[in-house]
Structure formats: C-alpha cells, structure tokens
Image (cartoon, rainbow, N blue to C red; front, side, top):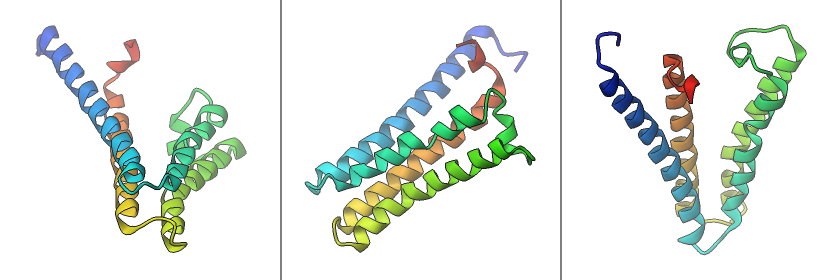
Length: 138
C-alpha cells in the first residue's frame, strides 16, 4: 500500500472502522431484539458473558497479546486461555440452557446465537485488520 496516496489510505481506514462499528452495532441490536420482540429479558444474561469474555485477556495476558495465540508454558497464559474459552462457551450455552428449560422460544434462541456470531465475526475482522499497524496511532 505504499503507492496509494495518503488520502485514499485514510479513507480506506475510515471505511474499515465504519464496517467494524456497523458489525458491533448489529450484534448489539440483535441482542436487544431477542429480548424485546419476545417480551422476555432472560436472554440478556448473555451480556454478562460478553462483559466477562475480555477480562482474562486484559488482566492475565499482559501487554503481549501474541502470547495467547502461540503455545506457552506460562500458567498465567494457560489460565487466560481457559477462562476466555469458558466465557465463549458460556455465551452459547446460556441461550441453549434457557431454551431447554422453556424460558425462551426458538426465535429468541436464533437471534441470540446470530448476535453471538456477528460479534465473533467483528472480533475476527478486528484481529485481521490489526495486522496493518495503522490503528496503533489512534
């Protein structure tokens, strides 16, 4: 991208950032709609897992986030991987358990799971875009 003018590069970066914002907003809207459309706010328990999901990465992984992706002998990194995985599984398990218990219906379950997958897709896009090193200046 060295031969692209600076204003075009800035426009592309703004477009990427807007795309990520639309994805995250769409995931949040699906989460709220899963509760509001069916007049049942129990699916909002999944938000608790969304809040807990990045906490092990913030507190235990330290500033070197690449250690989470690679193999490590550190017990802190292994604990981070375990707690993050447990939170991710909980994000899928909570709506499934609520459906199995008869608390929510199929529509709310589908909207909850689609919200989860939209948010995961946005995180994966952010990680993919993070290799550009252009967001480090923000």
